[in-house]
Every structure is written in structure tokens, then in C-alpha cells.
Length: 177
Image (cartoon, rainbow, N blue to C red; front, side, top):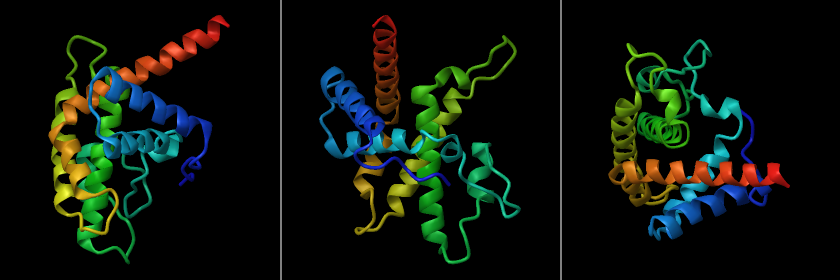
């Protein structure tokens, strides 16, 4: 897996600033742990291989959210509770990322298709809830952040829509200069 962006990386700072602007200024959500988590999540998905990082026992990438919990292998040294926590947190992150940043990828391109947006929201809320229940006091992120992501999943989706709009606006402004 490609390493995450370094803490001082300009792209990480950009995501942090856009998340703070969207959540704190535009939405009035003043939760520093939540906004820090979301900025880190965006930075973690910068590399394509980080978006779909779970693999099967045969080392095949798992792209289907419905298969992740059942088929993901983390290694023989990972106990079952840690495995379930990691995978459910990852599913929460992945579904929030797609629903919030690229929702058009979850809606059908033709009239007969089925939207995956509703199931992604349901699955993300559920997965963050499970991860929060499996989190011990010494783990990061704390259980209350994961519980908040579960309880306020739709607000976070909206906030990430605003983050995307913010970076699109910045890109448009850069194009005009």
C-alpha cells in the first residue's frame, strides 16, 4: 500500500482547510476531532491503491462493499475483534468517501439502473456504528468519533459535497489565473 501523505504535505493541508471551511463555517459543525478525521480520510484516499486496499485470501482486490466484511484478510496476527473494527471502519470511510465526494458514481447512468447511494449510506452508518462498539479506550480514532460519524453520516456526506465544491472552485480559479 502507498504510504499516506506526510503531515505537512500541502495536499493534506488543503483537505484540512476545505473540511474546516465546509463543516465549521458553512455548516456550523464545530467538532475538531471529526473534521481532523475527515481531512485525514481524504488524504488517505489520494492514492488509487488506498481506495480499494482490502484483499481476499488469494490477494485479489475487493471492490464490492458487500463482500468486504466476509472476505477481507488482514493477516494471521490480527485477532477477530481488531479485524472487524478495521474492516468496518474502512467500509464506513469508503462509503462516506464515495457518497460524499463522488455520489454521481453511485447513481445509474441509464434509466433502468439501480442507485447505490441509499445502500452506501445505510452500510456506512452501520459500519461506523460497529467499529465504534469494537473500539477500546486506547485506540485511534476514539469510539465517540466513529459513533458520531455513524449518527451524523448524512451531514458528513453533505459536508463532503461542500468540500468537493470548494476544491472545484479553487481549481476553476487557478484555471483563470
